Length: 203
Image (cartoon, rainbow, N blue to C red; front, side, top):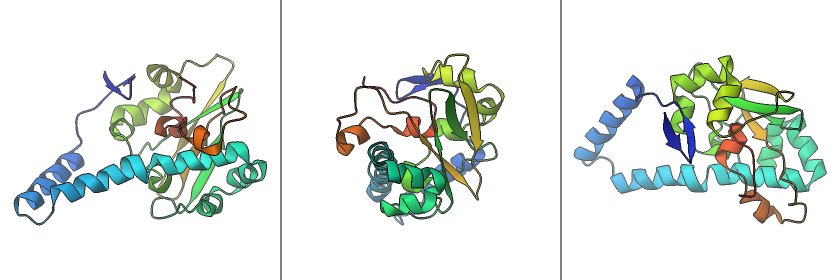
């Protein structure tokens, strides 16, 4: 068990592909074909600036605009494009909504298909074989490891991303935030809440 963002979960060793990528990156840097600072900047952009902040803005807008929320749930791809977010790995988006009766979580059982334009780079645990298999076979146990302990009467729906369709979870808006601005609401939304392994809280 390891921790990521304060949440416990199973963590597999790097895959063969990840090891190859690391070796290739080291080789390119050693031969001075790639600037390591540029790589770091690119990764930071997708992890912290371009990535989850985009999705958080979409969620916050859906919380404050009923018409936009309807468009997002009916056809997510053009609705997300309205916010200016589009690109590879986000061509065919579906948004699923958490409610008091239903909790959604996303996985890619075959590899690590992931909506980069709205969530940035996928976290390591999302790509791990343990998460990819257990999210389907024992989703409540996985959620509990992330600190999400649902009531037994809440239905858990697991959505399997593919190369054709990628999913975004619209989490429930926390009580007491009805008068928050979109910017304030967006600051509450994390990558993990949009994958569906955690819930939005005020803490």
